[in-house]
Amino acid sequence: LSYSAIELFKTCPRKYYYNYILKLPKKDWPWFTFGEFVHLVLELFYKYVKYLNRKNTKIDNKKLMARAFDAAQKIFEKKTPGRINQKQILEAKEVLKAYFDYIKDTNLVPFAIEKSFQFNLAEDVVFVGFIDRIDKTGEKSYKIVDYKTSKKTSKTKESRQLSIYAMAFRMLMNEDIELSKRLEFVKFLDRKPDDVNHDSSKDSELMEELKRDAAEIKIARESFKDEDWVAKSNNFCGICDFKDRCNKDTKKTTGLDFLDD
Ligand code: SF4
Image (tube, rainbow, N blue to C red; front, side):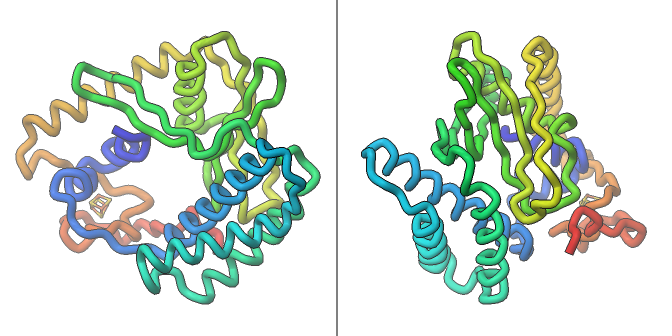
C-alpha cells in the first residue's frame, strides 16, 4: 500500500477497484506529466549537488540545474517519447528558473533525496513510500520536504502524507531526532512554505489509523465482488479516468478546482 492507494480507497472505492484491481488504462493528464517532470529535474539536481559536495568539488549550481533539466528531458524522451510537449518544457524551464533564484542562497546539500521506506501494517501488508527530500537542520534534527506543483494543496499542518513520511523517517533513523516538515510549492513561490514541527507523540495514533485502513482494504480485496466496490462522488470525478464506466452523476463536480491554471 502507498499513501495514494489508501487515500484513493477512502475517496472512492470504485476508482480504487478500477485502478488497483482491474488495472484499467489511465489517461496521462498534463498536470501529472508536468509534476513528474519537475520532480525528476529536482531529484537529479540535488543528486548532482550532493555528489559533487561529497567529492569536495566546486559547484556552479546554476549549471547543475541546467544539466539536470537536460538530463530529465532526455530520460522522458527515451522512456516515453512525445509525452512531454514543448509548451510544458518551456513552462517547466520558467518555473525552475524562478525556483532556482528562490533557493540559491540556501544550503543546497540535502541529507537524502527520493528516500524510499517501507513498514509493515499487517502480516502481509507493507506500506511503501518515497520522500522527495530530507534536509539536515541540526545535530539531530531533520526536515521532511515534499514538492507540490499545484497550489491548492492542503497546508503542511494538515498533510497526513507528510506526517506518515516523518513517522517513517523516524523509524528508519531509529534514534531520538527532531523533525519538521514542509510542503514546497515549486510552481507557486508566492505561497510561502509553512514549516511545521512534527509531533512524534501522535505517531502511534497515526500508525493505528493506517493499520485500520489497511485492514479495511484487505477485507475489500479479499471478499468484495464487482458490485461491492461503491462509487462515491467527489471533487475529482470530473477528471476521473473511469468516469465513463461508473454510473455516478458526476456533472455537479468540477474535478478541476485544485488546479489554479
Ligand atoms: S467518476 Fe467519481 S464516483 Fe465514479 S469512479 Fe470516478 S471518482 Fe468514483
